[in-house]
Amino acid sequence: MRKLTTFFSTLIFCYSLNSAYAGEVEVLHWWTSGGEAKSVNVLKKMLEAQGHSWKDFAVAGGGGESAMTVLKTRAISGNPPAAAQLKGPDIQEWAELGFLSNLNDVAAEEHWDDVIPKVVTDIMKYQGNYVAVPLNVHRVNWLWANPAVFAKADAKIPTTLAEFFTAADKLQAAGFIPLAHGGQNWQNATLFETLALDILGAKDYLKAFVKLDDKTLGGDKMVEVFRVLKKISHYIDSDSPGRDWNMATSMVINGTAGMQIMGDWAKGEFIAAGKLPGKDFVCVPAPGTQQQFIFNIDSFAMFELNKPEDIKAQKSLAKTILTPEFQTIFNLNKGSIPVRIDMDMKQFDSCALDSMAAFKASNKSGDLVPSMAHGLAVSEKVQGAIFDVISNFLNDPKAEPQYAAIKLARVVKAAK
Ligand code: BGC
Image 1 (tube, helix red, strand yellow):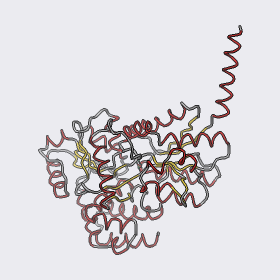
Image 2 (cartoon, helix red, strand yellow; image 1 turned 30 degrees about the vertical axis):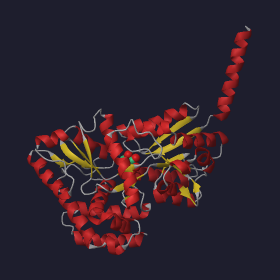
Image 3 (cartoon, protein in one colour; image 1 turned 180 degrees about the vertical axis):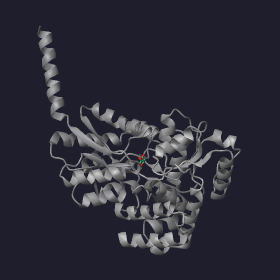
Image 4 (cartoon, protein in one colour; image 1 turned 45 degrees about the vertical axis):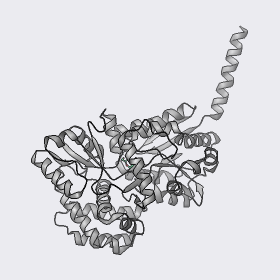
């Protein structure tokens, strides 16, 4: 009897400890594809294991345009989530408006400044204070290929634009769709910035998409980017408008298409489908961008909360994200590389190891550039203006590259 009483009082004690501590975090994200959902679930499970509850707020739509619209509505009505997937300059804008909470205590305790590269922490801080937590580093400029399809078409996996067109012709002649692509704004912009990096080089890419220099935006090299974009569009099938990016990846997985130019979240789809790198699929840097690296960093910005237990849960979330355990499992599923520089990379595949090596080397050589298409380079407003020019150009068969570049410079000037 005494034993039983002790057992129950211990149980009640633990319960009260846990319930005093347990809080809820509502997390807004757009990770709904197979690989993405698997990845974010890791975080949910790790948070729940600490006694907190996770309220999932997933808003479908690659690139996050819809998620951002929903976030604004919630914030305006005074009810933002605890954490939201926010990127680059948008983090600064939300912090400036006073929505974000200070994470310096967690950052100091966990030594974030020592284990995360400065190029990343600069984005996570507003006026020197941490307001967001990075989850990973995605490389945007990748080309994914199905080697079996290439073998059937007797084509070589391309490393330059000239080789890309040779391979595309062969794939087409053999009855395959050369390039799997979804005609959505952000996917068009992803393809565009990858071509721009090759054609402009890193220095002029930065001038165009970070400094927003109108001479570079409207210059001859940009005209060439539009010209090549149009040429590539002839190797994309006519069902592409509106297609989701993961459906395009499936076309490479199931062998209807030969290639996709997409960030390494595509690898998450190959992995979720049980495919092996080097055997079932191949990753190579997008044509002409071997030394260069367009970075896209996923991060959760933390919003101001009132309830102490929810604030504790929010801090646990922030802390968990940067633990080596989470960094490993999450990035293995997501296709990205860990954002910590002190990680053991034993479990990672050759695509991830190449990405890590290129990330470090490009940071030294000046070839590391932020993604315009994924919100790391420009604000949402400027990004929207650029997206419209690119998509309108692609959708209009009569559009002139020369005029598109002039228009690009003009709209960016008006939006900045
Ligand atoms: C995000 C990735 C995501 C992709 C497709 C990108 O903007 O950074 O995490 O997988 O969009 O949804």
